[in-house]
Amino acid sequence: MAAPTRIYIVRNATADIDAETGKSLHRLVRASHPSQALRHVAADSFEVKVASQDDLVAAFESGIKVETIASEQLELPT
Image (cartoon, rainbow, N blue to C red; front, side, top):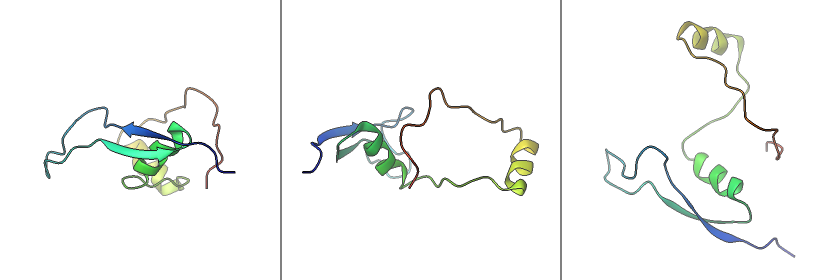
């Protein structure tokens, strides 16, 4: 039996409207957990991979600092 789902609204925390297209940045996503809804939306905009040594050097030279998550990871990456 499939897990029960809800419809979540995923909003951009910094803007309501895309400046280039004029479209709403809100998305309605049917999922069984809010993190799944967020991951679905983020997949359209972001890529996640392990940083290479060159990535790290370039980021540090640009002043980018390492961020640490606030809590332990609950889902395994796919």
